[in-house]
Length: 288
Length: 288
Image (cartoon, rainbow over all chains, first blue to last red; front, side, top):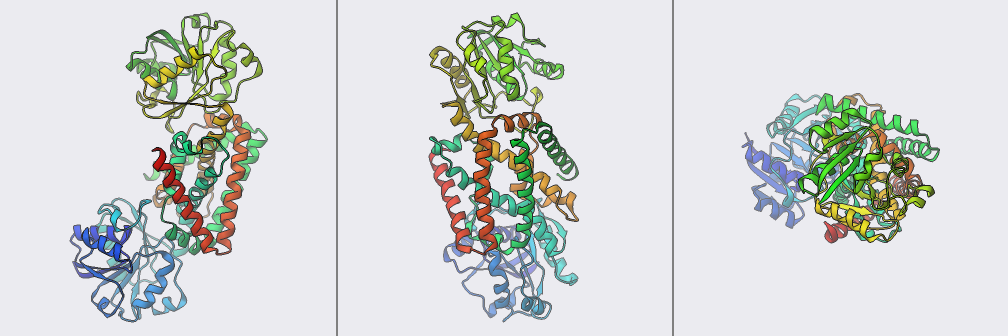
């Protein structure tokens, strides 16, 4: 059991982490730091954090672990702020959806001013803020860790926290993580955000009734497409290179599909669809 | 209460319709016609149909209503077969996902050899066959009817059936239906089928674990992408023109998005995402 853990940005993920840590009795005191008074108060009121702070200062020295749960574009800067006060026994982790985001300066401070173990719990909903947090958000989901060196003690500390609150751990290179996520998460979100706009621009009489006539597919898309704009703008830009590559593969495949439709190639389309069904079956059999 | 209704192709939709009609006591006898012995036996065993036939013949004259629940590419041909035996008092309807599919010959027979009221109950799952049918599949969903003329009696007969089993009715032009569906159903399916293949071609070490690291978005896509290949090949080809148009609008929007990412246009991306969230909110407020 830790004496103190700090959660910077106790929003949907941060406050859910606080709730999970507390309900599993992994820590005596959880400090929440947030510039948004509203979110900080929400997190405090629902008991996701025990102490409220608006700024990072010397008091952060008391925390064994500091989780940064803010939008990805802010993480590197926040680590630099923490480094003014921290020491190498303190472990810093994060929950960002992109992992290859650290500047050289930050990497040089690692194991000198702190021990950095970046992480990404693959959990969430389209809602944001402490107000939507859930104690069991992480249960039975996967958490990817992308440690920057072999500091076993730090890796173990972060792994144990996530395992104790129900997650399965996978360790990989930051760039492997970013490539996988560009496909399984960032591209689907980009598509979902896009298609809602495309639909709204469609020239039809019953535009306002469009959602009535949407079966599973489109409703899922609009749900995903209602995720937090700030968070997702950050993710798209921080993972720009892999996302661009993945998007180009997708566009190539969809143009091929379009060509098959335009040229009435029944067998090509049928085989493509059949293959998709088989891929899904093989994936599902292995893992779910 | 009708004496006899025929369901041609008692698969997922047809057998669910049979179950719903029977549990609401709307008809004494339901005849199922299917060339697939396996599916016909399944439908009979679960009591979705009372009589089993492999072919369309003179006996079909006894049915007040004939629902065609086969893949869209077969519907027009089946109507022509029925017309050899039917009379203008008999109402033919269907459940196809594309509505502008009737040949001139068929339209000329309408109100002479039968009364045609095309329909599309927007309900279903990614599973197919009588074996997966559900009595409540249609409850609280929308059914679109695209009547070809003003035969009030026939329209009322078909409307009442769907209303009695829990559906809300919307009446529109076939081309309006096909345009809306190209956006809310056909394009999302085309994307889902494509992206599963794109993902599987990705050059990563942990390919078989890909699904573990997929949050909501991608899992939804693989689920949709496992829908019946034959049914969807038909839909894509039968609604080729609208689908092509909708796909081009989507590609234009996604390329714009890609350009914003490549050129680091934070504000443009943020505004685009924010607008999507607002569109969703306005749609949801109105209708769900």
